[in-house]
Length: 511
Ligand code: SF4
Image (cartoon, rainbow, N blue to C red):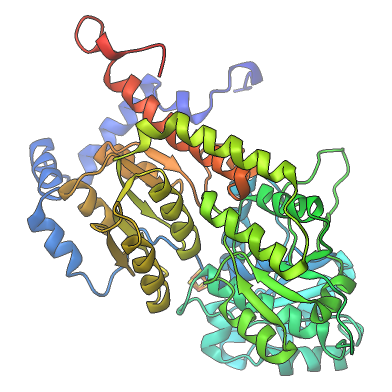
């Protein structure tokens, strides 16, 4: 039957139609399911302490991980360099997942190729896939650099990327002088932040080889880390420019993941110029804006380049103050009045919202640096962390976070749940409830189950638009964070006080 394009329903509406409702009912007949009462009984049981103990005794199963695969982070690092094509040695399905994950977050195309290894490569190794894949990728997409990483399959086989790339170049797949940095990124260890780190180190070591000069270029290198807030890159650049600092942002994907819609498809918008990246070895110092997604890169820069390397996270008032003072100390440049005024505005905004955030008990999950930074800001607001869940944790992070929590009277009762997943968090939220949950889009299932209002901060955010277009760093970032947090609290108050004649005495116009 011909379809009327005016009447096509999207899936929100479609599945409410009687024919679909009937279909769902019919399906139940064949599912051999339990009675609604039994389903309800078990659902209630999963909210108890008894179930929580069983849930936390779990060893060999992850449910709803709060982390991604290493190659996803490696591809994210790679696209921040001019003309760079990520190339994944491994299975096609993995790469489709990385691309769609990033595309669903940014609503932007995310290019990356796969060497599409299948059964024969699993038996004989993936050298031929690399030779053919590099040749095709170079011929079709004409990149200035191809950044190679791996999926689990290539790692299990033990593919030697360095040797394979040399062989592929000798076979004429790509020109000898085309930079083809690589990183081994097995996802059975680490997470997307490890992949970011491995690829960043791989790219920098490739591009800077033989580029060391006797004198410094006087610049400051910034490494953002696995930071998906595109406006943060622009904010760091703006701050550096306001202070008159000559800088190189190493992996600047701000144009790539937020390109203008001008009617022309550009596969490689923006990115750090390869010659600037090559010259980063001659900078005065490097500042990493995250610690745990840059640890190997920082070690490499300190040891191999002999460069001063610092970590500074410009989140909240304290973090931004420290960042600006660090910049001033390293460069001798003064902090301009414009930034002082911005600081004043941020403090004013915090004062406006303080009464509503102070004393709120919250749970948070996400990557180590993001969690550390948001917790730091929430402590500045007098909020009280209760559950802090970081799946891709490590000992150094937990020690640093404990130091932060102990430094505030509001942080002392917080528990750090390292290596746990979102199904663990569900048990925590039912047995020890909180006022607020902070995390990525996957938290909406916890919001639905547990009824805790969700502030969407982190990666990925797939079910709301444009958050990534706002900064979370600097004094402007303070105001954006506050906006998301305090207005979520207000939405919840409105929702809980909107019954006419019953609860609406507090359904106030003014908050
Ligand atoms: S865990 Fe390994 S096999 Fe699975 S999607 Fe990630 S890279 Fe691919």
